[in-house]
Image (cartoon, rainbow, N blue to C red; front, side):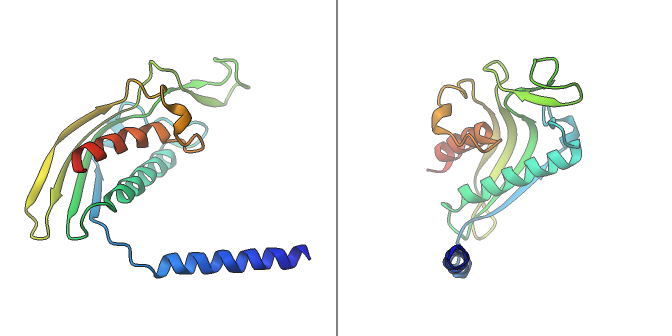
Length: 172
């Protein structure tokens, strides 16, 4: 009986996924350029190679910019050039902060290590004409104040919240 239940759930889930894929998503095209990422203030991994962590972090943030751009007209393009990124918290050896054996690292989140991001953006219309754009320096000094409402399972929740607040103010 359990196998049958699993099959039914799988079939219903499959239909849901197929339904989502068949819908046309209309959103502005987003291009994110990561300029000189080796010079960014803090994109340090915890127990992962620097390059794979950086790539994973950039992919998550690019996907988030695309998610936000779903509210923009599909004929528009949003170009973002990131010049600096400083993730919330700071990486320490786990043994140094009393959280594990030597050789492991942890990202310790404290209010003094705020998330920051610097980038420039331009929003273009269908003809390629710039509608808006500027240099942006984001920082969220109160990032821990509203943490109960943020997605705790998302390792970039603080950065995404900071980006969302900027996006809502800039485009809504």
